[in-house]
Length: 533
Image 1 (cartoon, helix red, strand yellow):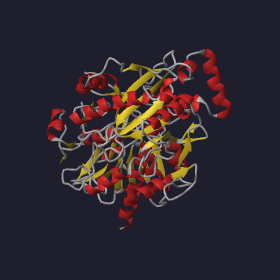
Image 2 (cartoon, rainbow, N blue to C red):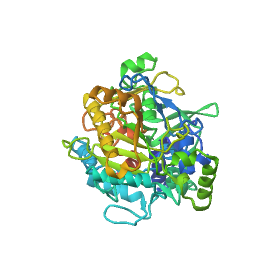
Image 3 (cartoon, rainbow, N blue to C red):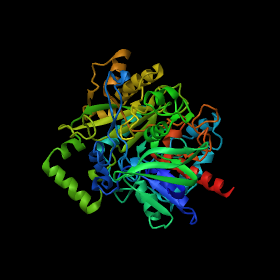
Image 4 (cartoon, helix red, strand yellow):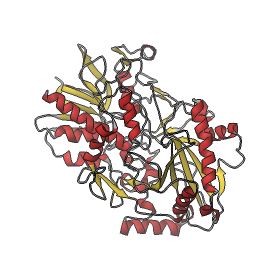
C-alpha cells in the first residue's frame, strides 16, 4: 500500500523549499518533498564565486542544452538548472530582484486577479530579512536574507558614472516598484556566504516531525484516478515507489521540469504525447508553450590603467591573495556575485518603463566555467527585459531521465532584434563617455566592425546567451486555454497546483528567483485557505 501524506511537493528548489516550510507549519498536516538531486553539501555552492564551478558541474547542475537556435546563428546554449536542495538558488547569481510593479499589474489586468503589485508586495516582504531593516517596501526578520555586495570596483564605479553621463541616474534600491537607474545589486548572502533557499526555508523546518524530505527521488509521473491527481510515482535507488496525497500535490519542478512531468503523466498536447506513446489523460495544449527567457548580450571591453579581476585571477599570487581575503574576512572577489553593478534603462524613449537590464562585471571570459582572459577588461551584459519571442519545452522521450527539448526561440520576434541592436548601440554610447575615456576602452565583443542593423542583429546571435530565467511554460490565466487558474490549480483535474516560475504569464523585469519565492509564499496561503474552507 502506498504511503499517504496530506501534501506532496515535487521539487526542492526555491519554490519547493518555501512551500515545505510554510505547509509544515501546520503541525497536523504531513508534508513530503521529493527532490531528484542531492543535498547542498558541495562547498562551491556556498562560496559566492563558486557559481563559476557549479555551472556545468553535473553533480549540482542538470546541464541541459537548448536545441540549435536559428536566432543564435545555429548555436546551442547550455541551460543550467539546479540539481540539488535549493535548486537554482544554489547555483545562481544571488541577485535580489523583484521586477517592476507594472509587471504584476499587467498580470492582474490580463485576468490574474490577486496578482497585482499591491497584492504580491506583502509576500515579498513576508520572507525578507533586509539589511536596512523594515519599512513600507522591505521586511526584517524573515528567512530570505538580503545584503549589500561586499566588494566594489573602481572600473564599475567608472561605468556607473559613465551611465550617468549618458543620462541614466544613480539609485540606491532596485526593489521599490521601479528599478530605473544604476547601482550595485543587493544579494542573497549572509556575511559573504551564499544564502540559498535550502538554508533559508528548509533548514529551519528540518526537524519538524511532519516534514519528510527525500533526495535523489526522481519523479516518473503523476498518478491520476477519477479526474484527480492522487499522488506521485518516483524512482529512488533503483526502486520504484508510489505515494499518495490526501489533500494536494504541488508541482514545483520549474519551467523545465514541471511541463516535462505533466507530459510524462499524459497531460499536454495530443501530438506530443502520441509521438512518444503516452496515453493522454488530459488535453492541455498550452503545457510547455509560452517559454520566455532573458537573452543577454555580453559586450566586453579591454581597458588599461585600472584594476579588473582578470589580471588578479590570472596569477598564482593574485589567486592566493583572493583566497586569503575570503578566508579571513569573507570579502573580496570570492564573495562576489557574478554581477555587481546593475543598470535598468530604456532602449528608446517609446518605452514607459525600463526594458533593458545590464549586469556589469569587472572581468571577461568566453563563457561561465572558462578561465578569465589574461588582459584587463570588463563586461557589460545587457538583456531585453520583456522579450516578445516565445519558445517551448516538450519531452523528447517517454523516459523521465532524458532531458526535454528546450527551444527558447530567441530573437524570433522582429521587435527583439530591434531591441538587441539598440542595446549594443547604447552600450557603446556609455563606453564612450568621459568617465571611461581615461581607461581607453576597446570593444572586442562583439567588436567595432559590426555597424549596420543587420550586422548588430547577427552580432547579437553570435554573443547572446541565457541568464537562466526561463518562465511561462505552465501559464497562469483566467482564460480556458491557460494551464493553471489564478489559484494555481491545474485546469481539468483536481488535486494539483503548480507553484514555480512556469506559471508566470509574462516574464518579470529582472532576475526571477525572488519572484518565484513570492509565488510559493502566495501559493502556501491559498493552499492553507483551501484546507480550512
